[in-house]
Image 1 (cartoon, rainbow, N blue to C red):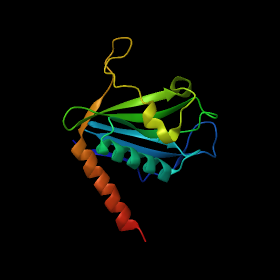
Image 2 (spheres, rainbow, N blue to C red):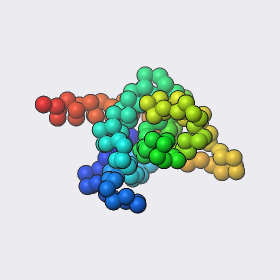
Image 3 (cartoon, rainbow, N blue to C red):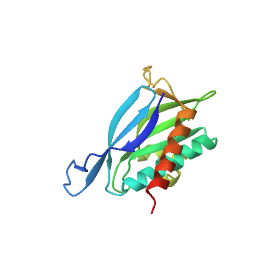
Amino acid sequence: MPFAICFTDEPNQFLGDDPTVPYAVGRILAGCLDESFVATLYEWDRRDYEAQWLLALERLVAGDRKVVLTTYYVNPAESSNLEWWALYRGDDDVVHVQNHLRFYNQLGSGFSIAEASRFVQERLTIDEDGNHISEWDVTLTEIKLFIEQVKRQKRDTSP
C-alpha cells in the first residue's frame, strides 16, 4: 500500500475568477487511492504546503492519533473554507485517510492553520444521513518510508 503526497511537474494553472492567482496541481496516493488536487498559491506557495505535510506526517509517526494534510488554504478573512486530507491512526499499523472540505465557521473562532490538526473531527465512517464516508487505508510503515524519501531528496538537492 504506497503513500505519497506531492505536487506534479505540471506548470501552475490559473483557475477561477482571478487570472493572477496560480494553482499547483498535486497528487495523493494512499493504498488504492490515487487522486489529483489543485492547491491555491494565493497565500501559501508549494514549499509551505510541503512543509505542513511533512510536519503533520512526522507528528503522526511520533504518536499523534489524527493529523491533516492541507491541500487548499486561504485565510478565513478571504475564504469560507479550506480542504485537507485527514489521517487517523487505527489499530496496529493502519492509517485511515479521508478527504474533508471544512468551513471556517464550523471550526470555531480559535482556528489556526498552524494548529489545524487540533481542529480535525474524530473519525467517522458513516455520515448523518447513514452513508458511508469514503476512506482509504495505508500503513504507518508506508508513511515512514515516504518521510524518509522526502528527507533524502532534500539532502540530495541541498547546496
